[in-house]
Amino acid sequence: MTEHTIPNAATLRGWRKSSYSDNNAGSCLEVLDTHPSGIPVRDSKNPHGPAVIVPAPAWSSFVTALKDGSVADRS
Image (tube, rainbow, N blue to C red; front, side, top):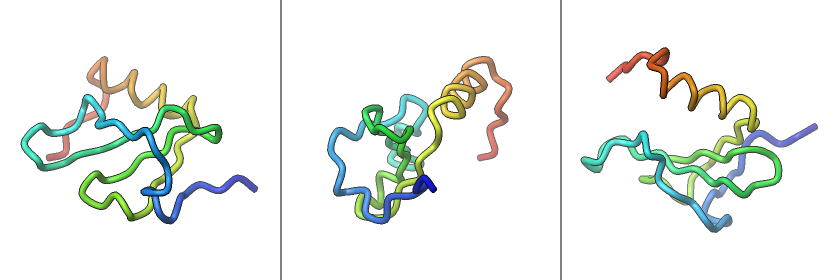
């Protein structure tokens, strides 16, 4: 069974802030593009907390939906 979380995301290097994150120090999502199991995603305000690993095809579909506007803003 594939692990879907990383308990301490700070153990990984190479995180980048998502281009879809809020630039006002609010909602900051970080992703790691080089993980072999998928795309880890974490809250930048909690770097030692967990990260969720999203399968690469699901992440690609999510980003495409953001770009074409089919994901609603729930803020």
